[in-house]
Amino acid sequence: MSEIKTIEGQMSAAGLKFAIVATRFNDIIVDRLVGGAVDYLTRHGAKKSDITIVRIPGAFELPLVCQKAASSKKYDGVLALGAVIRGGTPHFDYVCAEAAKGIGQVTLSSGVPVGFGLLTTDNLEQAIERAGSKGGNKGVEAAAAMLETIRVLEQM
Ligand code: INI
Image (cartoon, rainbow, N blue to C red; front, top):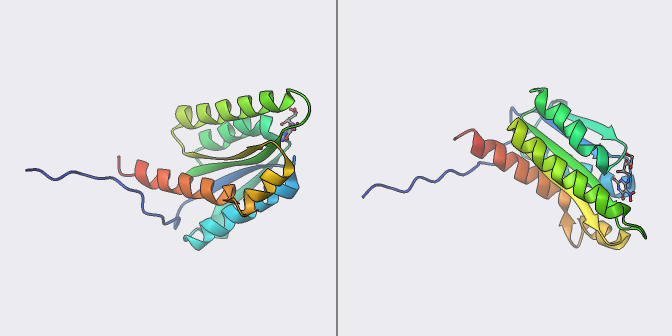
């Protein structure tokens, strides 16, 4: 009987280049996501000089700038980091929907893994929880998912 073949990503970031696209909007939160992602990638072997941080206005701009980074072929992976916090109007829903849909399209059309590190929360407290406190750090999670996906795709 033949063996089952399993493809799994090993979590070494050595030799890879990354673009981290991060919003200025809600930077008190987003800076924590960026810090977590950089810490994760460097602890897994990435050189600081292989990480480029791109600062952009808000989550709505994430798809376009991630697309530019992914299509440039300069990076093995792209990380989209931001935080959309619900206000009193439907603005939140439009920004979240466009950002999520757009980032998904970028990763499919470019073939470059784009980590989805966009917090979408009802309030600031929920965002703080997910930016390095009791809910973990979404920047770290997204960096790990991006890295694992890069390493999986290399084997396919
Ligand atoms: N952008 C965010 O990244 N987070 C938010 O919470 C947010 N809110 O709440 O409005 C937000 N809006 C700005 C938007 O992403 C665009 O930058 C802006 O509309 C200009 O295109």
